[in-house]
Length: 267
Image (cartoon, rainbow, N blue to C red; front, side):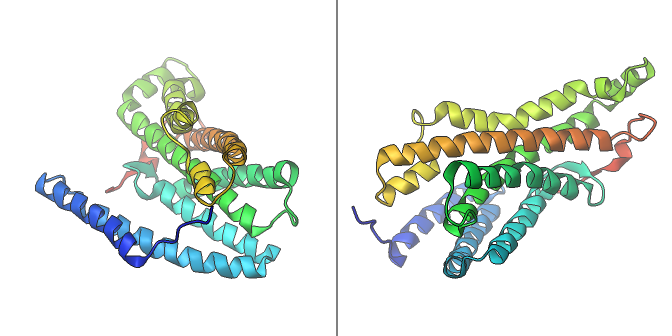
């Protein structure tokens, strides 16, 4: 089956629905209508630009350009990790921890999937590498952002309890243990819910896209299972690494809690 093309007026109808939603939020005084419209505009601009970039990248298909594209995606994801946190580590620590965690988890899982499991020729073929990395980075970014946000907020609210535990002789790992475990669970909940509901409550995005493009449903299912597993691994290890690194940063070399290393931001 040939994929149905979409014209400008059809996309305009979908955009009109978003504008209608923004109007409803304004009437309800939710103070989020402008944010919604800006996000919608960013979606159009960013996806249009990335479409043009990918067409050029697919035409060239060299390792250097694929690596450059991957690096840009990683840096932008690192910025988004800290963009909407209520409290975050001062300086560039939040960006560094989030970016490094995504690099270790998402990049390693992507390379492993491309070289060992999927095996395109060449292994860095952009038709496979960029979408794979994009899905892994997007989900890992969400998990890390949720984990770090829950950790820093919990430490701020429970700072008196944590300091009492330290005075009783607990090591810093034990003093912050509850907050750290809750943060890790928060980062893993979205992907766990996604896997639990896949195929029953919703059809995941990659599978839906392949079916719309005319692929056999059985083949789309295989790719979606692969993606769900790799996303779970990337998100899990990325969240664990980020939360552990951020937890260590909240204490000095003598094991004292340093809440002054947190800063409050406007989301």
